[in-house]
Amino acid sequence: MFNFAILTAGNIAAKMASTVNQMPQVHCYAVAARDGERAKEFAQTYGFERWYDNYESLFSDPKVDIVYIGSPHSHHYQQVKQALQAKKHVLCEKPMTVNAKQAEELFALAKENGVILTEATWTRYMPFVAALQEVLQQGVIGTPLSMKCSFGFPVSDRPRMAQPELAGGALLDLGIYPLTMAAIAFGTDIVEMTSACTKTPAGVDAYNSIILKFAQGQIASLQSNMLCTLDNSATIYGEKGHIFIRSFWQAEDFVVIMEDGRATKHSFPHKITGYEYEVEQLCHAIEQGWSECPAMPHSETLKILNWMDDLRSHWDIFYLCEKE
Image (cartoon, rainbow, N blue to C red; front, side, top):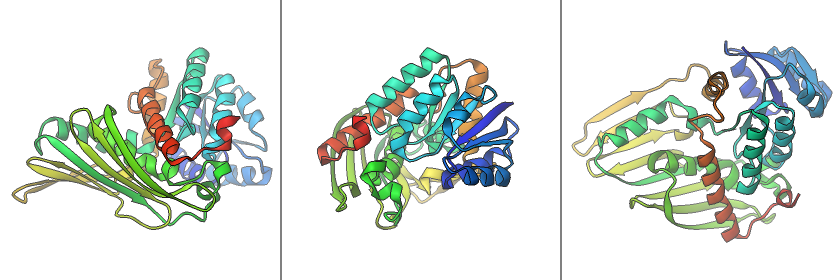
């Protein structure tokens, strides 16, 4: 059993805490937040043994095995770096960093310190992913040709979405999900990327549209939006039928629909909340002595960050934290 620690006490951290306190693989050991009272209340609510009013004390605690980081994107790089230097395994919320250069440095630091760093893109760890890839590889719908995927909610009032200093915008917080879905379906070998976005007055992307063309000819049409609710599903089209994935980012099922109307549903209900899979696989990777989690390889984290770097460059969106 690994001693599990959580950095920050926000909404995402709370969902992770409610998950890990139901998991036999980890012990709810510590939580840290800049606000000591908030950390104490969080620890008491979710059954954590210790709480800290600063991050440095958590990093220096020799009993901490794994640190989960759920802070705003702009803070990930420095916090992950500190955790790795303290030789802690790290599970960091997506995007792991705001650009690929930062991620490359952190992966190298993890290797140097003999610990695992993995990105908590929870979709990538879910059971439906392997089953979906098997259906595609078996040619059930024929040759996969195209995909459409959208992800949007009216969340522009949240500081982490709205503020450039927190690396806000639709792309990093929401757009990473359709990009990940495209990578799950078609891989990461793209030959062409076109896009457009509309910015907020503060200068971050409010909504965007992205088209990826892959080396084997497949095309993915992706949208993310922080001003309104979109369809929030993914559909993969092939010569013989299509696959529909409702709530694709947290999918518990998908439906294969053939050209003649025959439909087959594949179900994968979550054991707890869906957050359990990334924790389970990180624990397994540690036990096996691996350097990364196979479900979320470093190469894919870097590929998608590079895609987002290119998109933001095209849109002329840059963050202050990239210069630090």
